[in-house]
Image: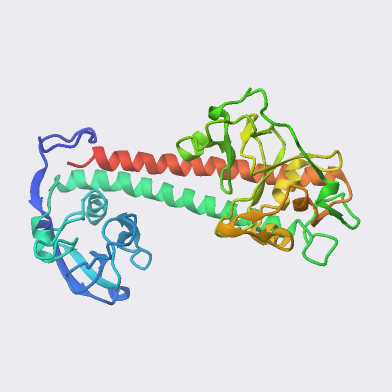
Length: 383
């Protein structure tokens, strides 16, 4: 049956089967700034042919822009390219362009040229690609739905980006810069200079080990720069623990952990606070308890910016063979950080940043849900 699994009330009957060449005309060109209304640009290479670099990720994409937004095309998973050329896809029969835009996101563009065996977007292949379309009234209903959904996704994306920018700016402005003793932005009611202290005055090494095997491989924790401390299986898909976890370090809720594994932007490791349940971590991790003078969450946010954690650790690090970090748990505490002169100000900063994190998490989940809804609808609302 040439009918979608889900369709709007009032519409019935089969959709009309056709090839792409029945509903669009392909014209090549390079200047997309002067496109007329009623065209959809498709990025490619080599005239009508889309040449492919097979070493690139399959997650690269053809850019397909909605009319009116052709300067900032949206993206679709498809083959890749190395030199930009444009294909103009123009409707032949006055079909709804917004409908065709959504339809294009549901087409498997990965077609192969028989002579070369590589993906291409030749006119010959477009003649072969089959699809189905409804009448123009149903096209309009489907197009309106996806236009509204795309608008929600765009608004949620923008809101999330704005929140992340606010947080990044706050992490810089609410802490004193190098050589300064007061931040540029401060909550009302707090004054006086901040104090420079050794990190060892704020944290002490935790020596608690999993000697009685209370925690097993299912309780092993990993540390991610984006996700923080998480169960390793949940974060990475499986456990990477050794046969025995007896000597693993116990990481309790609200303890500070320093992972010495290098990241691209943070080559000396990262510092986080465990906000989840108690678990265990590899002996390569350093685990610390916060002293009474400091909030562990303040330490977490202090070291979150890339420049600050890198600047702190660089003088303390000796890189060994295989890019390992030759730094002991004790030495990693020997650098200087700067603290507000009261614990109350630390907690006020933490409260504000945690509120931002909650908003970021909320909008991240909303955006993921909208994208899931769109993917499901693209699958169910087209033949």
